[in-house]
Length: 274
Image (cartoon, rainbow, N blue to C red; front, side, top):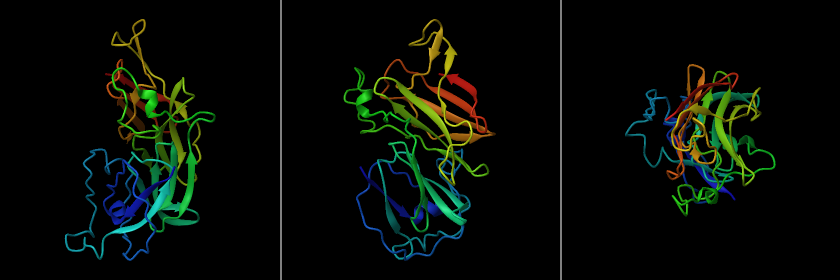
């Protein structure tokens, strides 16, 4: 299955592109537009941890030059599945022997791509599904609460927007895998220049908290990798990677979770169950 990502100046100048469904297949076109020399990086969902989506460093775009002749689609690129996570951008990344503006795109099939943002060249792509397993699917989420489950149409791999540490050249994301009976979620820390796992990566996401809430067993509430939906964008704050959870279709018993992991060691530091 192939999906198409359409690139435009919107990606590099504002960094606000977010695709949720497949785009219509279109041929690549010649770039008739001047490249933006600002090299603004978009390392987290909506530009920064305020999630406001504001690029306060924009100096070139105006209401005059954003027009049909100077602003538009650059090219289209094929990926293997739907894209729910916001594409991220690292400007001036040293890769393949030179500095390039690189766009990182994650799909619901647990595949990550690193494309050149100016030419569309592919630097690397890798799939992070556990060997011998598959991604969870919408059919796995059917329940008395929600049948058919239609929040996500088929595969449910990487859904939450990753976060990038540009100093450590590392991208963090959550990928999901299953053998059809047992479900797993893993936090990955991947080198953005190669796609290779960093030391200690991945780690399986497991959490428990004392409590007597819905679904608790002997005074302990446990994280459920099937029912807990990692839809929100990851955040990186003071060396901690934060991962937050809601549910699939309010499928009880479920709880909201906020988990924090050391960005260097991937050791779990924070567990909050709501």
